[in-house]
Image 1: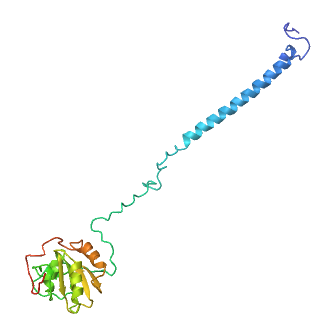
Image 2: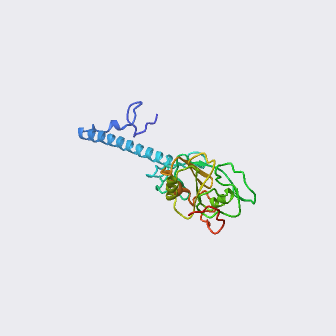
Length: 242
């Protein structure tokens, strides 16, 4: 049988590096171990970097300070803004509460007949086309004309006819001005009643501290249909003394 001259002698012999390689020195063994450890460390670092890249591509960016993190619900945004606080200055038409104040809902209307008013004295409603000149009267005045003066922003101070003259004088002094009516009113039910359009205050004496508060709030105030209109040059009823 022909035999390959380059083959090793002996049946079944195999070719391998172990037949010719020399044994490794200790230095080469240490280098091989270090290279293996270094390669493993690089692989771990690479895996961590890839994982971080994948997470950052999936998660949304974090919110900047003071910004909304997103929307909650369909079409609604989350807001962290604090509503502004008031300045402390009352808005136009604002009136501080006055203890004992009564309010009504009378509507203005000009009529040429007498009117049965629901309040005593009346605090608004239908009235004469002619207003009553403001001032101090020592006798009762026509309701329908006085109500027209209320429409123009007047304050009407009525008092029981039995009120002592000193109290009447104190009442007049507490309500100075061109838009003030003062008159007695039989059957009043209180010593003094202050009336402006749709507001009324009952008092026991002329030194009540609510008198100037009422005048400050309602003289040509927010309830009058025509505040600041004239309160002179029309009807001057009998008994005008001031």
